[in-house]
Length: 98
Image 1 (spheres, rainbow, N blue to C red):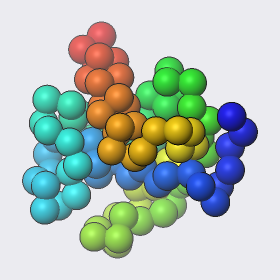
Image 2: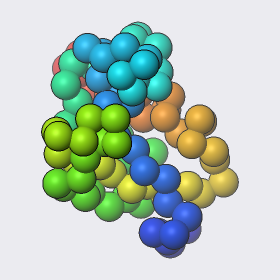
Image 3: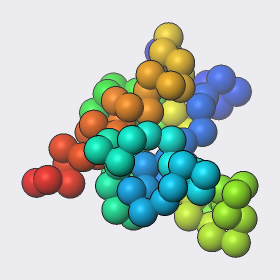
Image 4: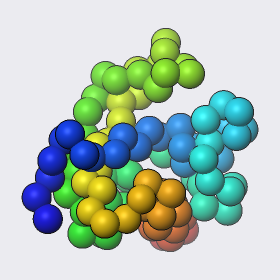
């Protein structure tokens, strides 16, 4: 499937940060999160799932507008965002243990 920026989902590093609480932006259980995830790791997670992506540096998570950590736009495909995030989280945890 071709990458379409109009239908792509936005994935912030804050979603996978084990050091954050749910109210601070973490979207997954801590067992699927890592300490301070980078954009490169998230992009590698999308790549390992055969999803097309675009890394956008200098973007700020709306709840933490002062920290411009960036985000990754990932093609949605036929999966909803709630199905894609745990899959990426599993890849992040697996890569962290290496």
